Length: 116
Image (cartoon, rainbow, N blue to C red; front, side):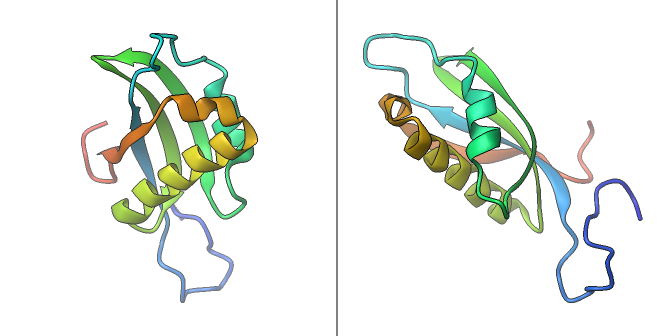
């Protein structure tokens, strides 16, 4: 088993899960307030149990918009992006003031087989 595949418990019907880096891009706060650095732990703690988030980090100003980088395990890039959006909205549900940073996109930045 390599370090990126989970679920070698005899259940071979599930697709292999791989590590992805998804960037969640957010609209700037209307008043210009920076995205709180603690958002990373809120996302990690609030993520649904089936979302295998390994690490999250905040980029308060990634160019013109703030972003959150989320390392997570998923069976496919599209599912990783969807899981990152769910993790963001779950964090917003836990801390409603985060809705002041509107979700613009969630896109895979690094996937298995790319140069890391």
